Image 1 (cartoon, rainbow, N blue to C red):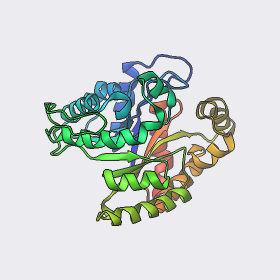
Image 2: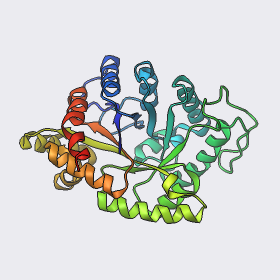
Image 3: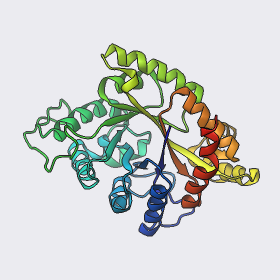
Image 4: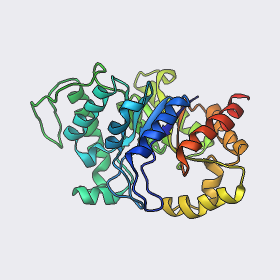
Length: 309
């Protein structure tokens, strides 16, 4: 199982994120052997949220050989041409190391701010994926929603035909069917699944893939936005869950505690082992606080316990 790290884009205490913080985080992730550097995407959220693609671009020079990933980017909110332009630039500037994670987003507020109907998000996402692939290949856009265009966006991505597209889905049947048909990989949500649910969804996804003539063994998957904090102090873990994460996600503390690697190293490793055994190929961690130190703590104290069994 591979490990990735989410850039710390959220301001939990109202502080402004700085470029120095993001660079330190990136350098630590690279030095600790993380395989992916990720960034999520929101216009507005319950906390201040730094723009994800802009943050990825700002730290590329310190990312070493890590792949970079959008987990996920919102092409409906941003617009297909605008999204294709920024993703092609990220792929070019990273030397062809981009993985494009896409999703409709779960926030109606993002859609209201962009002047779009939240109810149309899935239909528009389907059209956006086709438009992105056309733009990545240097071809005209043909879309029932966005119209036809002969414009070609250049420069093209480094990766021939464009970077791989992984589709975010919480595991519903319709989302998995769409993922199998349109995408090159599946992004599950770390706080909207469990190892058991992930395994069941992966089995359903395999059936959809076979129906489309695709080999499930060659189809990528990852669990994104896996909130993480390694501490042997149970009171500290409970405080982070109750005061920071649960209010932000609007989820019960007990539910989050059972499914996220927040707490003692063995608790974290047990959750990661369960995901590995369920078929997860990679997990993308998001430390809740003390981010660079937590990247080190996870590598030194949790990963060996996962690997030992």
